[in-house]
Structures are given as C-alpha cells and as structure tokens.
Length: 435
Image 1 (cartoon, one colour):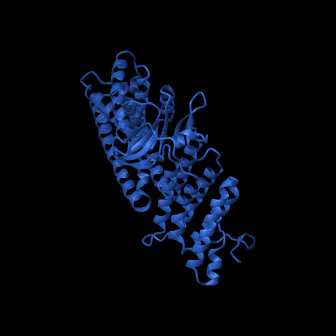
Image 2: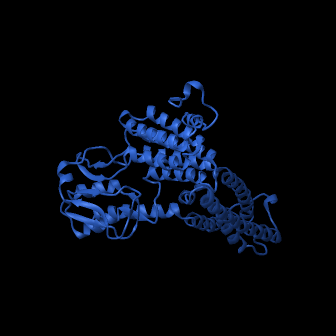
Image 3: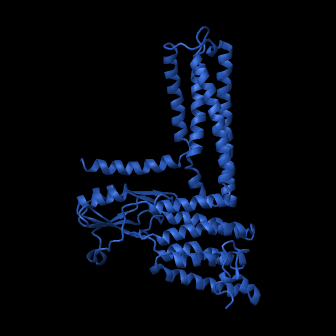
C-alpha cells in the first residue's frame, strides 16, 4: 500500500495542476477567502493596538468608505471580465483559438482578480462590524491602501492587455514558451530501444479510459512504477495526440495486473485539447496558425506573417540546435530502459513550421523571401545531420516559387533571401536567386 499512495498522489497532482492553471476562478476564490481571514485578523488587532487620532473615523465615514470600496471592486471585476470577453473575440478573430489556452493561464490576470475579490470581501466583512462607538479604524486605512494598490494593478493589467495581444507579441511569447519547454529536463533521453522490446508483443494493453488529447505524462512516476514491477512501458502516441476511448494508451511489457492498468491510466493526463506543458510543437502550431490566418484572402496581411516567421525561425533554430531534441526513452536508476515514448523528429517539426506557410504564401514575394532567409539560417545553424531536411524544404520552396511566378523578373525577386521580406536584400545576399 505504501507504493500505491505516491503514484495516486502524483496522478492527482497532475490533474490538480492542470485544473488550477486553466481555471479562472480558483485563485480569485483564494483571494476572497484571504480577504475574510485578514478582516478577522484586523478585528483581533483593533482591540490590541492604539492608532494616532488622525487615523480615527466616524461611523458614517467608515460606512461610506467601506461601501464605496466594496462597490468599486465589484465594478472593477466586471471590467476585467469585459476585457476577457474582448480577448476571446480578438483571439478567435485575428490570432488563433488555441491561444486562449495560454491566456487562461496568465498569472497577472488571476492575481488582479484575486486582489479585487480579496479587497471586496475584506471591506464587506469590516462593514458588518461598523457600529456606534466601534469603528475598525485600522481596517478602513488598510482598505484605502488596498484600493490604491488595486488601481495600480488595473493599470498594469490594462497595459498588458493592450500590448500583449498584438500578433507579434503573441508570437514572441509562443516562441519563448516553446524554447523553455524544449530546454526542460523531462527525464527522456535518446537511448536506443532494446531489441527484444522492439520485436516482442506487449503482455498487456492499457486502454484509454476516455477520449481526449494527451496533455501530460508523469514520466518519473511511470519509470519508478515500471522499475518496481520489472516492466517496460511503450507509449505509441506523441504527446498532443488525440486518442479515442478504448484505444491503446500504453503497451506494457512484463507481467501486469488489472490493478496496474488502473494506476497507469492515472499517470497520463487526457484533456479536451493539447497543452504546451510537454509539447513544444503546440507552440509552433499556434505560431503557424497566426501566420496562415494573416495570409488568408480575408485578412491579406503578409507583413504580420513575416513577423511571425521571425519567431518561428528562432523556435526552429533552438530545436534544431539542441542535441536533446527528439527524446524517446527514460531509464531507471540502474540504467535500464523503462519507458519508450513516441516523439517527433526534426523533419516533422520542420514540416509543421514551413509547409502550410509556404503553401498559403507562395504567391507573396515577401513570404517567399523571408522563408528562404529562415531556411538558410537553419541550414547553417542546425546540427549537421539535420541539414538534409532543411535542404529538402529549400528545394520545395524553389518549386513553389517557380510555379507561382511565371515572369522571370518576378521569379528572381521572389527567389531572393530577405530577413524583412522586402527591402533589405543586397547584391551579395541573393543566394541562388539569379541563377
């Protein structure tokens, strides 16, 4: 039983973490409870400390201040909710609906809501204790300070809202998030899969308990559980894949019981859609979505797509340079392979970041030139064994340009390499455009 509890605790921790990070009400609720507790602490202090005369308030003044503060907090919470509605409209209309998964996690937004809720409950709890001859002077002063701090938070939040939702700002945030995930040590390595495991049939199949996208794997928990039961697990899906109920979630090599199956399902988090936690390709997917939306005939904004390509370039370059990319195996303390996870390889990342943008932007010289500059960056910047895939994409870009531009001068223009899309190419930087 002692070995079961840590597994259940870790599994419950994964689900709780996802729930809290995606929820918009948990942190504000904590703020509201904190406000009530602080009000109780303030009332306890009121009878034990003496304040200067200028900090004393009449009963009518105290009631007015606390009532106004409580009403103001309700109004500010409504204002933040209105901004949230505008974010949903902007994200679905000009960015990508998948960006909303990250907006829900914005810490400043949750902290602002928690501060407003906490100030409201603090003021309301004190308002009930305002009586003739009994006024919580310290609490009223603290409410005034809290309202002032809340106004500063509101300005910070509004500034964040105005600046952080520009497509280029979202693209920068997505690229940084993807690079941060790629740099994390998640316990997976590149050790070769054992030959007997690759050739053998699994002893038991763990079915998916429900349909959903694979959001997270408890890699450390799976390795420890496999080592304790002398098993090896194979996850035939990539993190981010959508699995249907009853389909194979984990292949178990080694003697296993039905109880093991139930525990293993708890170590895989399934949700309605992908998350960025262990899936840097999801950040790349959001970037590509923003770029191709800008290239749609309804928007026709290749400059925005070019700016997004800047950050796709940075993300792909970081992935292509990392010798930790495309990890697939995890070892136990004795160095034995205990977990095999299907992962994306470099050509898959490259196709995700390039193919759709090339297809939608093939008629735009700006996009063709920026794509060429990006691929040339990758050709010289990624590890040598990954350059063949980059050259394959360069050849595909040449074919797309030749098909889209029949006029020789326009074709030559589109074949140039330009980091700004149009405007910075010099004679010595035209690649093979003049061939």
